Image 1 (cartoon, rainbow, N blue to C red):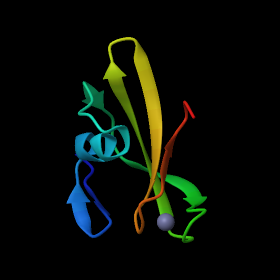
Image 2 (tube, rainbow, N blue to C red; image 1 turned 90 degrees about the vertical axis):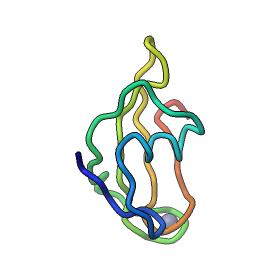
Image 3 (cartoon, rainbow, N blue to C red; image 1 turned 45 degrees about the vertical axis):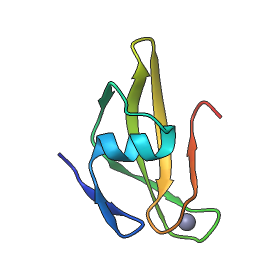
Length: 74
Ligand SMILES: [Zn+2]
């Protein structure tokens, strides 16, 4: 597991994917540093790859400090 603090709360990869997706993923990979800054607040952005369904793989990006998030399907 690679739990990280997001918006003041410790989250698992599954929970991080759920925060961005709105639903629990089937599977989630480890949380990684995205090596980019949040466009909203300049905070650190982390990423997680997950499967929202058996036929789809999505990478989500989430700021650790604010509500900003996006996915690579946007
Ligand atoms: Zn931010």
